[in-house]
View 1 (cartoon, one colour):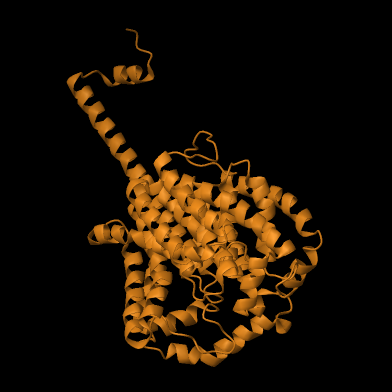
View 2 (cartoon, rainbow, N blue to C red; view 1 turned 60 degrees about the vertical axis):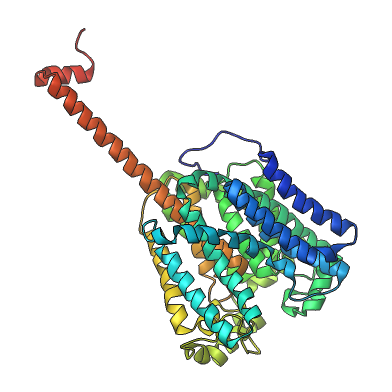
Length: 501
C-alpha cells in the first residue's frame, strides 16, 4: 500500500513467460501431483529433491529472477509434499523430500566461488564471517558426530547465508528481485494462509498422520479445531516466521489480492499460536515505521487501520476466538504457561554446559535436555554446535550485517527495503526462543537481510551516479562559459531565459 521509489506499471499477477522456464517449473510440480494422484508417492522421495535441484540449477543459469521465486515455493511446499508421500507410502524420518529447498539453494555455492575474492569490496564480509563460523562447526561435526547428520545440519545452517550472499552479489538487479519477492510472498500468504485455516477446521488425514507419528504433543491434537496451524510447512514455528515476513511485506503491496491475503494470513498466523513470531512481528512493525519518511509513515498507519478492520471481525468469530484469546492470555500469566516454564527449566539445566563448550560439539549434535528441543533456542544451539570458536565469527557477522543495514539512511523512500530490514531483525529477535538463524526461519532472516544489503548498495550507486552526472554537467557548463564569455549580468539574464534572441 505504500509507494515505492519507482513504481512499476500494472502487470498481471500471473505470468508464464519465459515459456522454457515455466515448462521446467510446471513439469516438476505436475509430475509431483501426478505421482500423488496415482498413489505412487514413494517415487518422489528421491525423484522430487533430485528434480528440484535440476530445475533450480537450470533456472540459476538461465533465469536468475525466476530461480529466486522457485526457491521460495519449493521451501513453502516441500513439507506438505513430504506429508502426502508419507501418508501414501509409509512414515520415513528423516525424509529426503525435505532436502529439496536446501539443495536448490546450495546451487548458489557457484556464486560464492566466483565472487569470494571480491566479497569485502561488495560488502559481503559479514556474510563470509558467519559462513566461517558454520564451516568450523561442520568440520568439528565430521570429527565428533555422524558425518551424515553433520552434512544435513550444514545444509540448514549454510544454505540461508549462501542465498543472502547471492542476493547481495546481484545488487544491480535489486528492482527485479524486489518485484519478484513481493509477488511470491503476497501469493504465499494467500495460499499458505488459506490452507492453514483449512487445516485448523478440517485437519486433513495426511496432517493428522504426520502429527501422530512425530509425537509432538506441543503441536496440538490430531483433530479438527485441535491443531496448531503449520499449514504447508513443517511445524508452526517456521510457518509463523514465513507468515510474519509476508504480512509485513503486505504493508508495501499495492496488489488487489492483498485484502483476502490479509484476512487468511493474520488468522492463520494467530492460529499457529507461536508467540515468539507474534513478538517478532511487533519488533518488525516498530522497526519499519521509523525507517520511513513521514509521508509514508502516515500511509503505514492508515494501512494498519484498514487491515485491522479486515482482520478483527474474523478473529472474533468462533471457533477461532476462544483459541486465540486463550493463547494471548499467556502473555499476562506466564507462571501457568507450560511452554514458557519448560524453556526456563531447560535454560537453567544446560546454559552453563553450553557456555562451557569452547571447541563445540559440532553440527549434527543432539542437545540432551528433557525440557528443550533442538530448535527451542538458537542461542544454545550456537554454543553447542559451533562452540566459542565458531559462535564468535558467526555472531560477529550478524552484528556487522545489522550495523551496516541500520547505520545508513539511503532508500528511505523504498518501503520494501525498510520492510526487508524490519523482517530480518524481527526474525533474529526470536533467537532466544527458537532456531531463528537456520533452516526455513534462517532462510527468511538471511535472505531479507541480503536483499536489504543489495538495496543499500543499489541506492548508494544511484546516488553516486547522480552526483557524478551533476559534476560532469557543471564542468561542461564551465567549459561552455569559458569558450563564450559574457558579462555576469548577461549570463544571469540568459540563465533566467529572458534575454532576447
